[in-house]
Length: 293
Image (cartoon, rainbow, N blue to C red; front, side, top):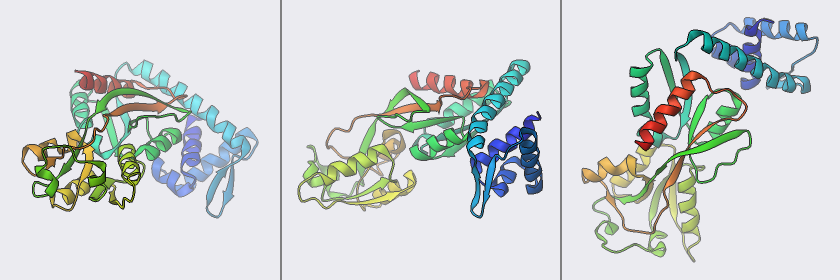
């Protein structure tokens, strides 16, 4: 069986659309159609139901998807063994805060040690990273999560990320010499990262738990947007220390003495059933080396 057919099959299963699968594979849509029809003819059964909104795997198609991924993993292992060097693309998902702080150093080191390797970095939250690992769009992901039980996605803690509560130098809380209370914080405006960010969600839960509180959180998908609003004196934010320490050194932000916020684990995530190729393994080793060294 031609493995190109399996690549097309898994891409269509992942995207649910002939158009999207064709774009991902850089093929004409008619070629994707021919590949799927050829595979279905060889197997003697239908793999997809064609619906107005897209394609849906049949019951046999779902079984076939798992087996096709096993075959493609085995082929990738054979190719890696034969090539003997780390090369090709590795897709990594990570929160924006890690994309701008920890990951660039890893990529820079890999460009020196493995110049034929291409790290493709995607900024994404936990839910999107987990979905990307399940669909095969991502090889690895970094998560900022205290607890991470996703069944088919396994995680391991690599390091921990300290958090910092910050405001602008002109904010009334900037001059405080003693810890700000939860009651005081509940009266402030907050600029937090979007829903699904574990430490932002936990902060909002704790603010809402203050009797009579009416916290005013604004959610962003961007660290820079939250940080800029706070630097303009509009309120407070809670972010990884690595994303604000330069602004604190420059005097553009001030750390607020407040309640203790536990460091957030940085977890490396991968799909439990999929093979970790040489490129993904090289990324993992360099990440661990920089995080612990």
